[in-house]
Picture 1 (cartoon, rainbow, N blue to C red):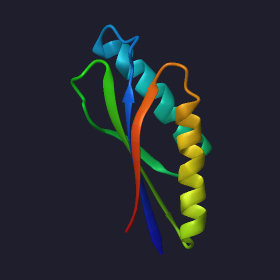
Picture 2: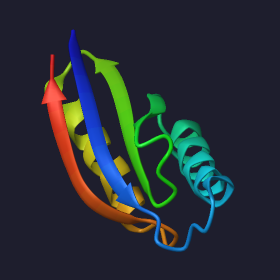
Picture 3: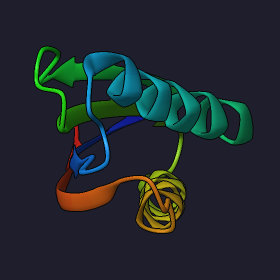
Length: 93
């Protein structure tokens, strides 16, 4: 069993309020959660209106499959027009 954890930080420059930020984060979480079999949550920067840190976890039998799936998720995040990817990290447990 392989557990993959992806953590990434976003900048949401257009957010004028926490409500704007939460709209963008919720949309991203719903889209990723709906397309991939992962657990996803906002894990840091909860009270910063223009930043968000998101955590994604996935369990599978093969490390290669997990790594590939998490890379696809990062590609989706990069393509999001409402947020900019500042950094990411993938860990295996």
